Image 1 (cartoon, rainbow, N blue to C red):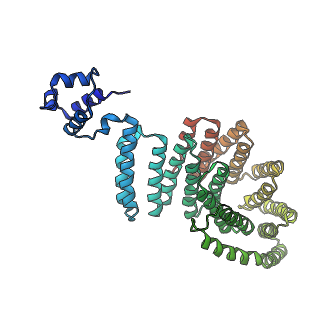
Image 2 (tube, rainbow, N blue to C red):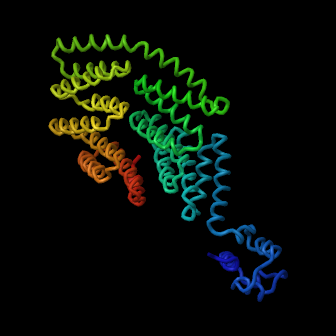
Length: 422
């Protein structure tokens, strides 16, 4: 570790000063040389003189390099937040850039805070792709030190960026990642936010039963932890509860309309229309918690879609997986994924097949079968590179980053996260 004397010499040479110029009338050249060579220690009063002479504060000499860097970073980000709080986001971004000069010496937590701040600026500017990129970098750094609160918060912020970009399914995946961290999260307000955001995302995806389930979880959690006076979610929860109840009441009416549509498509011999109508019928039964009837509808929908060579093949498979996940039936989830893979290979539907490979990768990650997860990750990657689909490549890079982080290979995890393109 660098000594006080070495710091004095280093700073003196940075300024181009001689021993004589620094010594002045407060200390002899011989004494100063002795201090620089570590043969003697300066008093507090002498340190204050040298600090003034060398244009630094005393802490420059008394703190180690990491401590000085951390202190300097906190000063920079405090100033940046003062602009942020006044909605001067461009000025805030210019200010935080000062931290680039000391970035290599920052600890992972400070690096996470650096990227999180930049992400928040871009998010508030409505630049959601830039926000997504920086929140991901924050997540990487917080993951390195197992900072679960910030990991969960980063997942929420990534999901929010995707949600605002209308990428609702991808957003849902990140909200679910945040949910998986709940057992390790200490900040109850983050947990309440996870439940609420999941409810909102499911609502946007027209999954009203799931939306209501998470809204109830959120409300129960707020009551259990006595957070009513500490959160601003209560009026939003009450509003959403009323809207969801209204939607659920209309499910049977929707069911009748989809059944009528199916019969009309059937008269016209429109297999694609029949498949889509039957899928919607299944969704209605799922919302009504009649899961066996829903599963039967989704299987029937798949048959019609295959015959009609429908471009939207994945929906009924995803709906079946959602039911089996709710039941905790991992075996049938794999059966559905295998069936989807087989059918899509026969149809030569490469784009949708990539989505299935990603789903199988995620399945095996949850099963902690990392070898199989890696195989399906690279199957997805090879096909996505072949059709040059940027959105799918980004999903694969994110999934591979998650895989390697779980395995403990931080270098590969970071490498794949940095491949994510705007």
